[in-house]
Amino acid sequence: MTVDSIDPAQFTPSEYSAMIVRHLMAESGVARDATVCDIGTGSGILAQTALKLGASHAVATDIDPDALAVARHALADTAPGSRWDLRAGSIWQAIALDETFDLVVANLPNFPGASFRPGNRSPHWASGGADGRQFVDPFLDGLAARLNPGGRAVFTQNRCIGLQRTLDRLAGDGLSASVRDIVLVAMGPEKCAALDPDAARAEGFVRVGRHVFLEVCLIGAEKPRSLIS
Ligand SMILES: C[S@@+](CC[C@H](N)C(=O)[O-])C[C@H]1O[C@@H](n2cnc3c(N)ncnc32)[C@H](O)[C@@H]1O
Image (tube, rainbow, N blue to C red; front, side, top):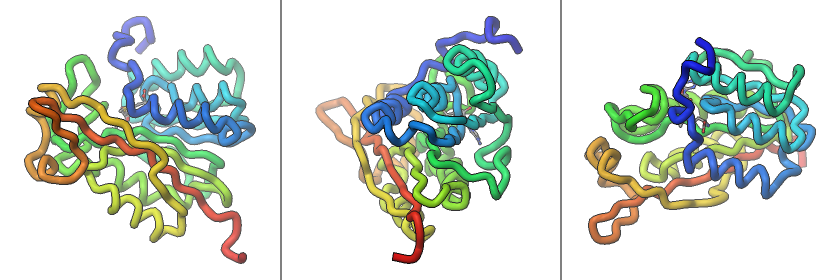
């Protein structure tokens, strides 16, 4: 698949990725000289931002061949040469167990609605299964092992899929985790119709009149430099 035959609108970065871009830019030291892993790279925007901010190397993965073609084009434009590596695979499949990073970034599909496929997006873009955690949970499973001591993960998730559950899992793996930012994203009729009824009863929505917003959390998680204080 060449990038010219792919509709670029399919891979316009979302508000979720924008939160991570803003965070990396506001704390540019976090990317400088860092080794970076971007899981579910899509447009390539998160790896691209980290490289622009001086990351020494970025590995980016996706399961969608079209996403990989688009990301290849974007990364080649930002960082010609050998500072990046694109890999096909689901979540950690393309990352060896002993491969570790200073910075892990991800905006994985986590909308709670099994059949949700927004207009022009690929089928892999947005749905996180009925409970929204289909990809977030396997991501959390492998995260702590892939961070260097002192390394950081920055990722987004909808609050309604279980914010405390995510924070507890990170703490259980020895990571120091907190919510770094929250934004509201308008649901619109398409998302309202696709929302799983159980998720609709959870915390994490702001309703004003007939409008509904999702609370989207930016979560940061750090691995201690050493277990010895
Ligand atoms: C919400 S999009 C965000 C992508 C990117 N951060 C951006 O803004 O362009 C989620 C991405 O995760 C990818 N994805 C879905 N399931 C995946 C999986 N099991 N493993 C790796 N990537 C996956 C999708 O193909 C899509 O590119």
